[in-house]
Length: 85
Image (tube, rainbow, N blue to C red):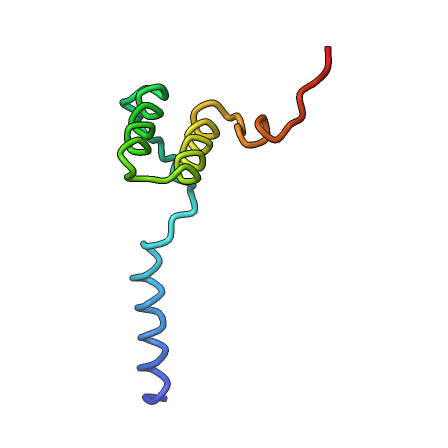
């Protein structure tokens, strides 16, 4: 009986101690934006002009910003054929 007491005690102790690490509530995280979309795009354009990033990186980052801020995919808009009037 004494041989089973130690493992059982350790199991109960670990469940009690680690139980506090679990949080069933979803944590809502918000990101505070302190710059305008236009300023961020201008900063990326400056980085492109100074060869800190290349054209594909520039387009990728601008697309990502548009998706995050405007919920619009610029890539989809670029790839979409122009509609005839």
